[in-house]
Image 1 (cartoon, each protein chain N blue to C red):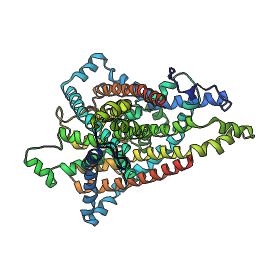
Image 2: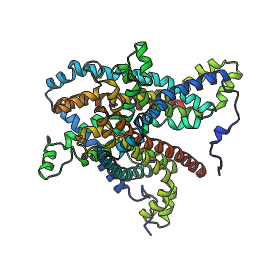
Image 3: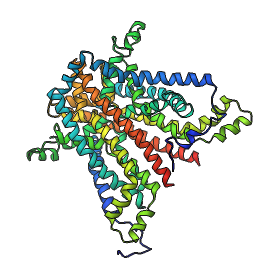
Image 4: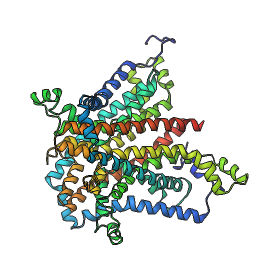
Length: 277
Length: 289
């Protein structure tokens, strides 16, 4: 029998081993590889770095990646909320199937989603041939990128709003209504403020994912220089030209954007937890 | 003990808070419209396009040697990545949930880091670190070890992008379960491994499988990161998603969608297993408390 000591901090064994392996594996697979980009960017000649990052094509790609991600996130805020609402609150045939299929964008490889949307919206596609008559262009245009990003980001909003909506005490709404509030007032003043932190978390997650998304976008985007080139594609095309420094510079700025999103997300989540207490 | 598959909340009688039927109908219709255009149409399209030239062409596209090689490479990659990341996930969850130490919050947020990184950047970092440009990479090259543009590179990039899945599934689960059961076993004289195998593992089995399924789905479907490190050598370093891309860019749409349909089957199977498991995880937690 092992010596049992009440004052020992850890009764359970294996702290050293499990902690050591965790830190080792985390460093080997994540920290050290990510550090190479940061070190590489700092070792670059600052002038060359800024020349790469502020070149018109790269700047246009950042602008496009951010703006399409914003539009997709706003659309998802609306439709993700709507889907969460109907799935939690209403009972209708097919609800369980829809609920399960919310996860499809997580499970479906991005390349498959990419070729599907490119084909659907092509001038002869199921949706595209209607749009063709109206003169709306989706393929090879920023609106096509937004469509792909909506697909990618949609589950984040539904899956963060859904549990909060389901846990909501019915008494809150009932008391608001018994005090004379209309349905709309109850929604505006009671439900929405309560759900807002979760909604914001979901929207931030979907935005962060959209900024870096590659596979689902490149097929529908057409990748026209200065028009429909997203930031990850710029990294790819610099790599194809063996411009490793250029690729790292573009990647470094993209990493900065992603990590600041992570910080925002942490702040939002802290706020969300506070608002529950 | 719960025999009903529904949660108690869902069985509650309809409340006064329910919206008027007209509002419900409109919102449900909008939801269906959204799902039709973003979920059902893409799914239907894969099969419509894949079978456009008949079942024979569809089968040929799937049985073609390059397609089979891509399937094999994808399965080999997943077979390495899933267990490695599952072992890591269990180890990390053990350290984080069973002990208290400084910097735990920071460690947990570092574990999620790969989710915040663009897949293309994930591929790039390994090209930079292990490619022939760096000292380490060229040393490997001199010793005949090729990582980038070869299978090990694909495995490493996939390890990175699927890194958090199992850990982030297990940490909250094991934290909720506490450490009393394990501590009791230790004080009764059980060995560390016995405690893990007899107590911890049965408690977390559903969460573990759930995390592994998510990890597997992502490792099969990963495109951006793998695309950077693979070098696109047909029959050698092409995974299924890369094979789909090549066929599509060669205007061989039928074959491209036929091969995609394999991935759709896997994705739908993943979702089906996931929703069954979610129920199990849920019921398991229910019976425990």
